[in-house]
Length: 214
Ligand SMILES: NC(=O)c1ccc[n+]([C@@H]2O[C@H](COP(=O)([O-])OP(=O)(O)OC[C@H]3O[C@@H](n4cnc5c(N)ncnc54)[C@H](OP(=O)(O)O)[C@@H]3O)[C@@H](O)[C@H]2O)c1
Image (cartoon, rainbow, N blue to C red; front, side, top):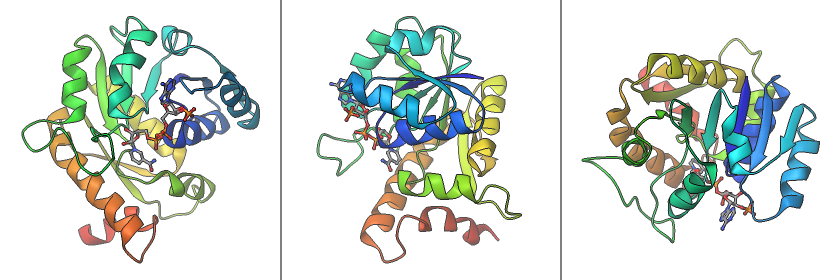
């Protein structure tokens, strides 16, 4: 697939690199320096290149939205018309000092995004894992037991794309249902982050939650 990365930081940079290594064509966009985008494209060693948000989005089969909540309007405006596009969002609706969700319980960042780009197909995915575990999960992808990763959305074909990408990274995709389920997964993601960084188990504990389900 052709993947557009909107936000090439910890999540976008790593996931874009993994998508490229898994064989997808990746356009890295939206960082504060062009040099960084060039370096990501070079280091990912796949079919990838740097570009503007508009270039990342225009021919993409799917785009990954990986920016801080405060950058949503800016990056969406730079990306242009996203009608009909599959947007995977790993972004969480965090306040400026990243201590709390600014949208929670009765709605979610993913649902707000769906309101802002009503003709796009939104899937919430990858926000329940800290970026630190992504390369490790990718490297262990051929092991028989794969960590689970929940995703949700309203459009079935976009969810198939998301499930494939989740598998490509090395997780077992778990369909949590419609996009409104992100009201529960986003606070869960915040809990995971708090436990991962403040608890003793470290970032890997993010996907150990699957043990609870067994
Ligand atoms: N990090 C995690 O483990 C994690 C886990 C789950 C969910 N999330 C969510 O994923 C989203 C992205 O998180 P992240 O940790 O990847 O953030 P990040 O590392 O700060 O990446 C954000 C990207 O946006 C770019 N950016 C910021 N301001 C910009 C501007 N004015 N102009 C152009 N580019 C700009 C940054 O540029 P630079 O590269 O130049 O800094 C960076 O590439 C957030 O919503 C976060 O809540 C993160």
